[in-house]
Image 1 (cartoon, rainbow, N blue to C red):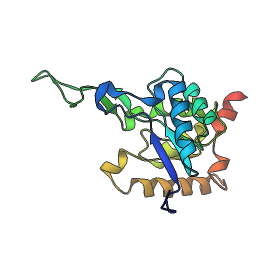
Image 2: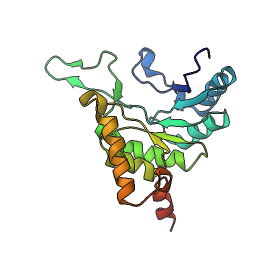
Image 3: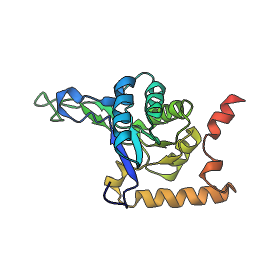
Length: 192
């Protein structure tokens, strides 16, 4: 709270890359609500829980975060996965099971963002498999208010800038004033 330049906190309630079996706070609505409320009481800054995709109904977890005072939610974090070295019969990840990320998780991420965006009134920050502006546009159509680029930055550190430029050109080509003109349009198309 001492540094005015910090706008808020993204709370990683969903990291499966930890010991103790990959405990994830955001797998239970009541734990997400309790944890979010506890942090909400400690700060006036933005509180943004990062939710796991490793649940059946992410909408319930999103609603719990909103009820506890979250300013927004972000999703998805990594999908639980593992890899095995068939030559020495050992796990390729030190924790045996860990987080799987990258382009392959985008369909899962889009579905979870769509579900959450239809369940809450707070902003939804979408992520998971974004490596080009077209991917980001899909997230906006699914209901995301903003997006994050993660794994793709390790491949090309210019990815986020390229995504931003691509979105700008796409909006101009479609004669849209802002992302808000794009956000959630899939929802409206499906409801017809």
